[in-house]
Each structure stands twice: as C-alpha cells, then as structure tokens.
Length: 300
Image 1 (tube, helix red, strand yellow):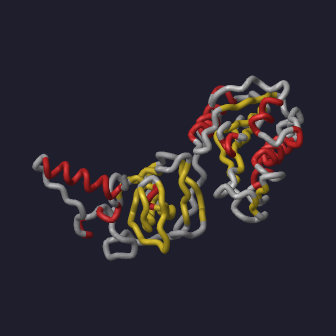
Image 2 (image 1 turned 90 degrees about the vertical axis):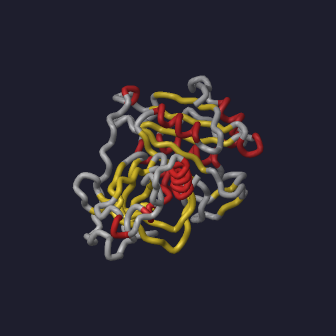
C-alpha cells in the first residue's frame, strides 16, 4: 500500500467514526518547520545534493529527519512508499541544518507529504540555505562476537539458484575493526553474457557483525539457504574491498566470469588459500561441499 493509500484509508476510518479528517490542508496551514520523516530503506537510503543529483551521503534504516518541503523530479521511483516522482528536502532533526534530498518513496512521513509540507520554492516553503554534506553516521558499537576475533571468511549458497545448479555469495571480516563486507554477483535478467562496464548485478554491503551478514543473505531474494565459514585467513580486508568494487565493472559470463568466479576473486584478494578452483566443478552446489577444513554447512 502506498503512503497515499494509507492516508485515504485512515481518512475513511475517521469518517466512519464520526471524526473530521483533513486530507490536504491549505499551504498556509501546513507545517512551516517541516514534519518528521524516517528513512525506510534497509540497510540505508541515499541522500542527494539535488533531486536525482549527486549522492552526498546515506542514512541508515529508521534515521529521523525534519522534512522541509517536496519537489517533483523527472522520473518515477519505486520503493517502500510505492511509486512517485517526488523528492523530499530534509534537515537535521536537532539543528535544523539542511542536508539534501531523499526520494519520497524511501522516506516515511506517516502520510502523503504533499499534504504535510509545502512544495519547495513556494511562498510557504522554508528559506533555502546551502545544502551541507552530512557527516557520516556514527558507527554502532560492534557486536561482542566481532571484537578482536581476527580474520574470517564465509561463502553463502542459494541451492535453488541458476536452475538449481546453485548461486554463491561471499563475506569477509576486517581483522582489526571486526566489520564485515559481503556481497555477490547476481547477473541481470538471467543474461549469460554481460560486457565489462555494464550492470552485472554485482553488489556489496558493510555491516558490524556476522549475525547481520546472515540476516542480509537470508532476506535476499536469491533465497540463500546455506553457508560455510573458516577462521585464520590472512585478512587483507582493503584488498578484498577493492576487488568487490572492481567486480561491479567486470561484466559477466556464465562459463568463466560468474558468481563463483567473483566469489573466488574476493577470497583470494582477502588472502584465503584454502579454496578449490572453480575449474574443479562449475556447479556452486557441488563446489561449496568441496571446501576442506571449513566449518560444516549451516543455515543463515
């Protein structure tokens, strides 16, 4: 249900109960200092300097902002709140300093934003101030399992992926901070070949605990259903992250530049040598069972 549908449903409920409910107050009656909005993307939403412009930061799930006004962009976006063309200008909840713009479908203001705050640039919108690049959000304290526990690598498998031949992803831990980096290469539209430089569905994310890594893969639409891990790798975390960034531009070929090859490239960059080459078996469902010395397979 979109945010607008939510408002309509609430209005109908109010009328049935004999309660007056104003769907869209006039601009002069809307909040001059904005309404509170909550980031609705998991794990984060992008903050842009201008609608559909440069990304200047991110906000984690449930981060709260003051929503000042809205404006329409050139194209539609689909997200948590449905589909629309709107962008919401946000400010720091405590200081009021303007930060940038978040796509309206990824900001939960509790109702239709066009009925809550004025359109940006209108007579009732707040005076514009230079958009400031927000400081990076403070990292939460690491989970106990990640403190000083050293290098650790994991591989995740979706056994029903690729026509039940299997699909794999990877995860590595920073030996120093305990942070995790994880991701995969998902291909796009089931294509067997994607030239380098084109979107190959490769992605990666960071988090602070192995538990969050498992949750991330479990929630993924590839239906990951198993994983194995090993301790004591060399743990060259920055090199593994650089490889993950490279894989995004590396293209895709089902016979030699696929999810398994990209997983192996991450593990090798991380310094993990206790892995069989992809040539031993091209099937991810078989390959994961050939990992000697690795922990037994578990469910995420």
